[in-house]
Image 1 (cartoon, rainbow, N blue to C red):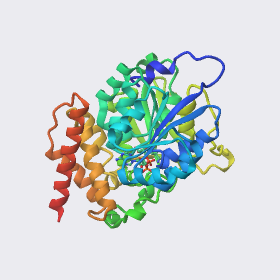
Image 2 (image 1 turned 180 degrees about the vertical axis):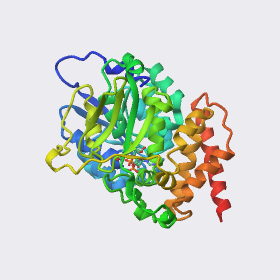
Image 3 (image 1 turned 90 degrees about the vertical axis):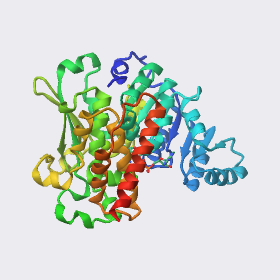
Length: 412
Ligand code: NAD
Ligand code: MG
C-alpha cells in the first residue's frame, strides 16, 4: 500500500490510542452511522469535529444533538437551511455549512486528525484528496475515489504525508494479514485473495437476471449497506471496484489479485505467501470491525460486533468465480483486470459509467443486465488521455458520465 506501507510499521507509544478529532464525510450513510456507533463507544478517544451529509436533515439533526460537532454540512442548500432552523432552538454551537468547497475545507481543517471518507461515488474524490494533501489520517471507505483517482490519489497521500487506512472489509482484512514491515511485501507475497459473497443472485439462473427489480438487487444476504453498493454487490461490480482498489492500495500487479466466492462472508480476505502459507482475517460480517480497526490502528478498540462462535459457524465454502456459469451471471467482474491493463484513466471511465448505470437502474430507466451493457459500451466509446490533475480527473469523470447517458438514451 503506497502510503500504509510506510505507516504500518510506524512506532507508537505504549499508552494506547491517542485522542483523535474527527471529520466524518457521509455521516448519514451506512458507513457513517456505523462509524458514529463505534465512536460513541469511546467518548474518551474521539472528538467529533464535523459531520457531512447530502439531504437527510432529520438524521443529521439527531447526530448533531448527540455528538455536538463544531460543523455540520449538508450538500444540498435547502437541507442546510432546514438543519439550521432545527438546530436554532437547541442552543448548540454547531455551525451549518453547505457547498463543495466547504466539504473540502472540513476534510483538510487544521483541527482535524482523522477523516472518515464515507461519501458514495466519485463525489467524494475532491474531499479525499483535500484530506490527503493536508496529511490527515484518512480512513477510506469511499472506494470509488481511489478507483477514479488512482496513482494521482496515491501521490497526494505520499506528498501530503497522510496515512491511508482501508475500511472496505476485504482490504482491511488484507491489511491485517500483511506483516508490519511493508518493505517485505513484494518479496514475500504470492497473491492476495479477495472473498466475495456472490450477493443475492449467486445461484440465480442468469437467464432470468434481466427481470430483477431494484428492491431485489438491494436485498443483500449478509450485509446491510447503501443502495449503490448493494446494486454493485448484486452485479459484482463491487468486487470489480475492489480488485482495482486492492491494486492501488497494496501495489500489486493485477495478476496477483484473485477473487473467490465465499457465500458465508466469514473469511474477509486472505494473503498467500511464497511458501503457500495463507493468512486470513475472519469475523462476523459487521462493518464496525474494519471501522474500529481503522479508527484504533495500530491499536485494537472495541467495535460492538458479535464475536464469532465457531461451533455455530455454517460450513464455509469457496467457489471459483471464473466458472462459465458465474461468468454469465457476473460479466462485470472481469472488467477489473481489463481496465487495469488498459490505458490510465480507464478505471475512472468504468466507475463513471457504472455510477450512471446504477442510478438509471434504481430509477427504473434500464434493466439489471443493461448495467453491464452501459459499462461495456462506454468503455468501448472512450479513449482517455492520462489524467495529471484533479481537474483532469473530474473532466474525465463528467465526460464519461455524458457518454454513459448517451448510451442509455440509445437503448430507447
Ligand atoms: P450510503 O449511500 O449509505 O451513504 C452515502 C453518504 O454519502 C451519505 O451520508 C450521503 O448523504 C453522502 N452523499 C451522497 N451523495 C453525496 C454527494 N454528492 N456529495 C456529498 N455527500 C454525498 O453509502 P454507504 O453504503 O455508506 O457507502 C459509502 C462508501 O463506503 C461507498 O463508497 C461504498 O462503496 C463504501 N463501502 C460501504 C460499505 C457498507 O457496508 N455500506 C462497505 C464497504 C465499503
Ligand atoms: Mg467490500
